Length: 370
Image (tube, rainbow, N blue to C red; front, side, top):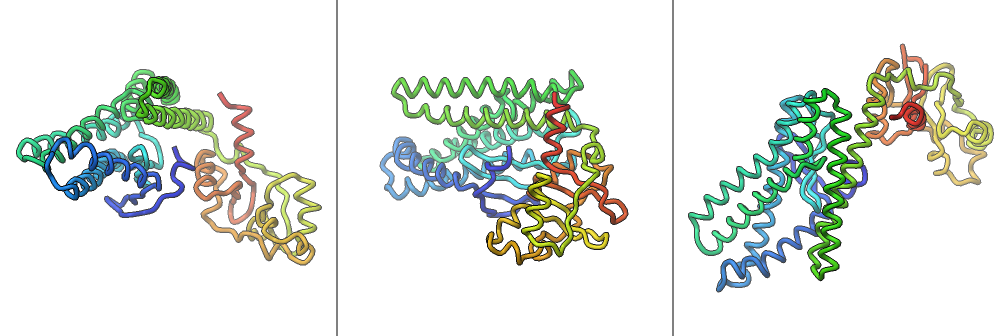
């Protein structure tokens, strides 16, 4: 679950060294929750209070709800960091929160502990809010009672055994432990996750046709879970196929290079059109300078191609965009995705010995894929 899901976000804080981000969709659900609590829940739970009091409590409850979601995700992240799995960010969005991990659990026990930490934290908060509610009256009691209920629901809902929910990850850890096969466990848990997602979609559709507009939420949740489960299964397949594969196994060794002094017109006519490559290394007197792609050329008006040289537009090389031939192919792919690059140069002793591309990895997956 990455990519488009995490576009349109803003960093709002850093906790435990983890950037906390808010997706624009969070503001939508925050407004809906505040409105619902202020106009329905609190007037029914604590009548005879001023209208302004309901809106204050509704806003506070919505903020504490999302603070609870952050606590839930931080619990996952805390255990992940214990196993030296970096957490790049925690993002709040319309369906709750997502912690982005750079890596997978090293063994089933780690997976289980990371997964179960979230629901346990939610149940803990539910208990604390419940104890607080029984010792208060009126508006505060209604507030803490709501937070106790919603945290209990959050913990229970996440225990549904559908991947990639916490319950699905617990299931994967059990299957992984029994079969010793991470790929099989992920595929099996993802299939169950898809079935549960389809159930939510069908149930939501039934509610809508029965006249209940609330059926839209189960449909949206089901759609989200289905896409997440499918993405997780594809990621597992990718990791399984590329497991043990090195950069040297998939890189292009016989590469075509460009000189920095040729014009863009020459580059297009003699290289891009003839070789059908999306980019070429730029080398001058044996020294690697950088890479030029169609994107840089298209940024130049067509009428200027005869005057503009490759040296004027190519992307200068950065060492973070190179790989060793003995590095894992999966690491190279992750680097290309992270840096938004279509190709990574392969270097040895400061010399270019090859090129690894997304298309090259895709072809390898088509041939070797399971």
